Length: 225
Image (tube, rainbow, N blue to C red; front, top):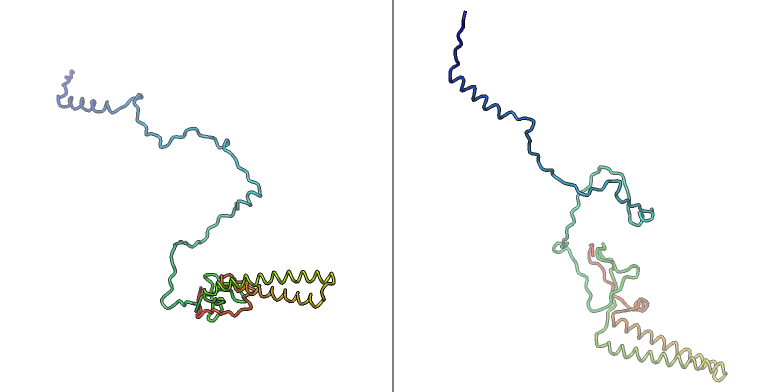
């Protein structure tokens, strides 16, 4: 029995050819290459860790630099924000302490001058004030200081000369005592004139100020200087 083969239709043959044409280019061989992305970083002249320099400090150097080690721990730390500003007292909350005239400000007998920020109580003595005379007395005080200085020098020279004469039995003991008394009086007068001149210049000695009347400056309210 013979069978006859019929040729395929033209449309089926065209479709098969199209499928083969599309599939073959999609299959890449071993020679196909893909593009690589560039490296994000590049290291040059890298030094191994074993070649790095090592710094060793002595115990004295560590103490001088203040290097300390401590154990790491978790704790609550408040946040601190440092800002520059000016503290302004509310209206009516400040009191001024003033002096009636020019003078020299001294600390109280029991303490030193309180610094800014010291808390004071009402009626507490803050400082003492020595009132100074008018400026017209400056010239007189300086002239008086020069006179008293010269008198003290003359009295000291006279006392030394009298003492030597006493050793030579040229004067009496009474004359020597009188000369020594004149020297002490002249020296005291000179020291008083020197203290007065220091007060007028605004530089009093504490010893001389203790013998003079002072005005106490007290705080009128409870507050902070």
